[in-house]
Image 1 (spheres, rainbow, N blue to C red):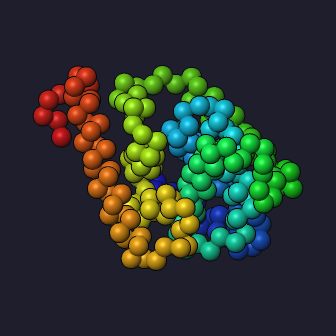
Image 2 (cartoon, one colour):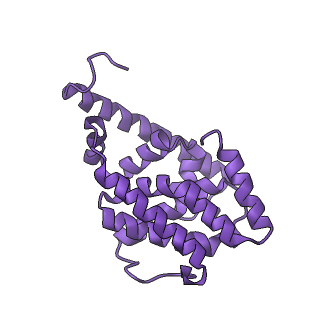
Length: 209
């Protein structure tokens, strides 16, 4: 997490403690929304689907924030919610079937979510993809997700295990440690495979570690 991360989390947690969940959700979307939408774009690779998943994530954030117990960072929880929204959308289980609370009950939060979605997608639509970045498109969905969480978002292995687990509360600490170790080994294999492909295409010099 960036150096400002603890301050961000402290500000949001204080808003939650005071019962101001509108401010807490709005600040979460402003601070973490763009990177979460970038993560969803890596998952879906379709701007409309990623935007739809982000809308679902925003609603789930609003619904679950009052009950969030801060047993992990809010950033980690947001990635978990975003990943599950993407998976559910991919399975066809969402399409206009919203669960929990709609954001119509919190127009201020809805406005922030829409603004973040529109501005971030606009940036991604106009940016030129780098040659090395395009290699990720050849990876499986699971491997792309793992790479983004570790390399782009700098999450720890325990955090990644929490993000990728369907029901985090069902895993005890020993199970989390085992899953984190498994993901770390898989990540190394993915990284080695990408490095090899990059060398083959002349994107990295031979012998580069």
